[in-house]
Every structure is written in structure tokens, then in C-alpha cells.
Length: 127
Image (cartoon, rainbow, N blue to C red):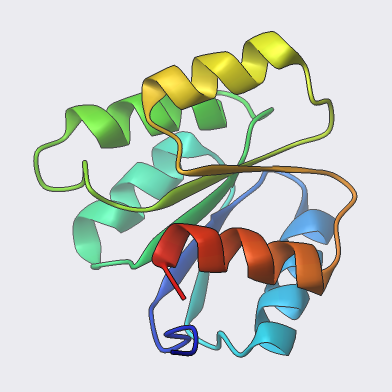
């Protein structure tokens, strides 16, 4: 079974270049329905408006971090089953543990390539 690349994906990062990189990697994998948000609060607004199949969020953002976004998504009855992948620049064990306890589905450390992204998404969405 192949990846369901028709799912809408929301990518969240406060760094425009990173959004572009992730969008391009997703396109290489076959995802074309990709929306962007600049921080957690903008992402939450978009999650209320449209049904997404996956969220890929950076950890370090202001005013609302990816971790806070994850907590809000997991606390929301409508969104709590949404697959959520966290991206971070530093793989601190305590961050990984905190994200796992908060209900993250997977974790990607920068820098990463299309193959890494594909395998992480496949692990979350079930290939």
C-alpha cells in the first residue's frame, strides 16, 4: 500500500525558507495539498477551518511554539487524533520525551531529506 498523498498537510514554521524546503520535499514525495502557517496560533486557526490529514510543525516558534500547538491539538476533541510530526534543530532527549508524552506521532531532526521525511510520514500514516 502506498502513501495516501492526497491528504491535505499543514506545515508550520516561522522561517519562510524552511516552509519552502518542507513544501518542496513534500512535493517530491507526492503531496500537493500543502498549506502553511507561521506559528502555532495561525496553525490552530487553519486547523479549525479545514480538515487536515497531517501536521508537520517546527518546535521553536513564537508566540506559540510547536510544542504548545501539539498540546492544544491533543486537548481538542475535534483534532486530537490528527497525526502530528515535530521538527527540531536539536535532538535533546528531554524534548523528545516531552513531545512523546504530549502525544507527538513522530520526530524529525534538521537537516533532513525527502527520504527521511517520507519514512517518518509512512511510519505515522501507516504505509
